[in-house]
Structures are given as C-alpha cells and as structure tokens.
Image 1: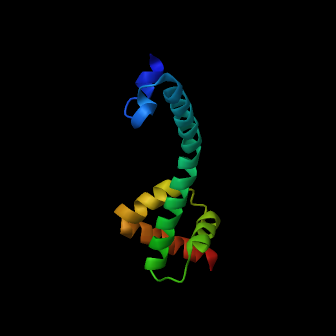
Image 2: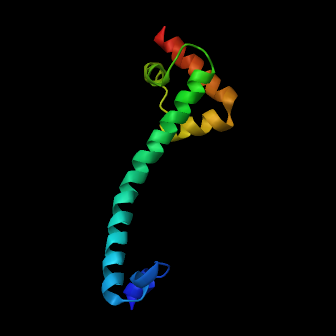
Image 3: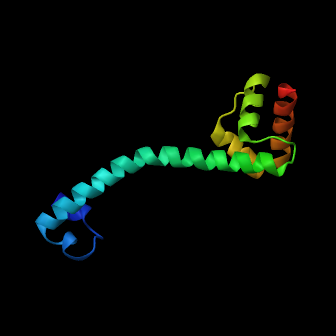
Length: 106
C-alpha cells in the first residue's frame, strides 16, 4: 500500500501497522507542507546574517540596514541571496558594493 511505502524508515509500530502508519504519514505530510514554507524564511534569515557579517567585517561603519538602504539609494538591485553569495565567494566585489552603498548614503 502507498501508506506503507510512505512510512518506510519510520521507527517501531509506525512502519508496519496500518493505523499507526496512517497517522504518522499524515503528520509527516503536515510537517513537510509547513516546513516548505518555513524553509524560505530560514534561508532569508541566513542570507541576512551573512550579509551583515560581511558588511561589519569591512569596518566601514555600516551595518546591514544601512547597507541595504545605501544600495537602494544607489539604484543597485541585487537580491539578498546573491549578495550573500558575493560576500562569501567574491569579497573584493562585495567590498566595492559596500563602498558604493556608503557613498550613496553620504
């Protein structure tokens, strides 16, 4: 049955009795649905932390909020995922973005 296939890998009775397996699979589907939504929030928070760490590391007197505000005023439209990636893999390019954002605030 489909329920048993979905319950494969579950612990104890939940994998081999229909009543327990059905409720366990139903709950797992609810968790999966909920956590697909939560994943988006979690990753956005992670990107923001990385950007903030990258900005503060440069010691130019900026924080995350000021940096994002400066980018907006400079007319630079880069999303947080890409900014986070640039901060990690291309520090020189990230530094140039931070300097442009700071110049736009001045």
